[in-house]
Amino acid sequence: MAAGILNLALLCKDGEGAYFTVAAWLPTHDHLLRELLSSPDLNLRPEKRYTTTGRQGSVHMVADRSERVFVAITRVGYPGRVAHVALRELQDDIVSVSLPLITSAR
Image (cartoon, rainbow, N blue to C red; front, side, top):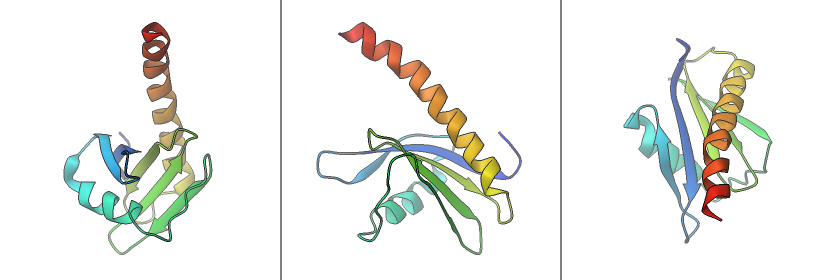
């Protein structure tokens, strides 16, 4: 993982619409991600890139059409475009692993 990326995570919605962490490089940011994604003002559109920056770092997000949210937490000043490249690679990796599993389960 690049030096400026602190964490990568995949979150999904449960049956009640709340997000939960499916996979994370480090579990240390789980509470932050759930709090951010539980905001009633948050309306993630599929394939749109989002970034929010605070004093201690930035959170970069992209959702897919299955309502999975891919998240990168980076150091302040880390280029958002680079973080979103990492998220695209994470999405591709997840799809390349899960698509054969879904296909074989049918």
